Length: 138
Figure 1: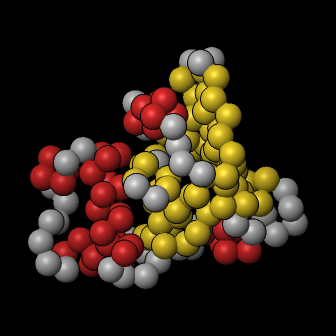
Figure 2: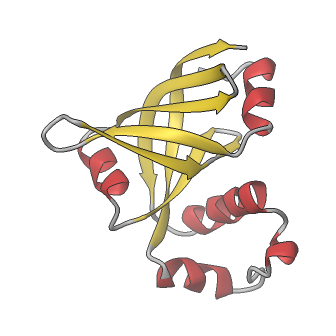
Figure 3: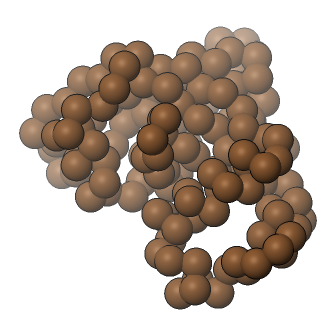
């Protein structure tokens, strides 16, 4: 499902979400993380060694909550691991620019293989969440 303009604006003015995934035994695992909204979903940067990465590999159904005071936006959806280049590098660069400012301001490598090498050194990848149901109250 597509996010509405109102939902997108709400997400654009916030930086952090709470991501809920399912552990192997079915119990919830929750984390507060930066997210970015790109044309085809909501992206969250993770380490490939993280519980989040492994949980999504086993059970892709997830939820995120973005709070703004007492207002909230809840997204239920399916997460997909984005770990292959060149998509990982391109999407992660866009993600970092949205969540941490423009690349030049961050001092992030912008040319050649330097950004990919930085991601590789941190064993970083992305989760792409495709919204299936969105609840929003302000």
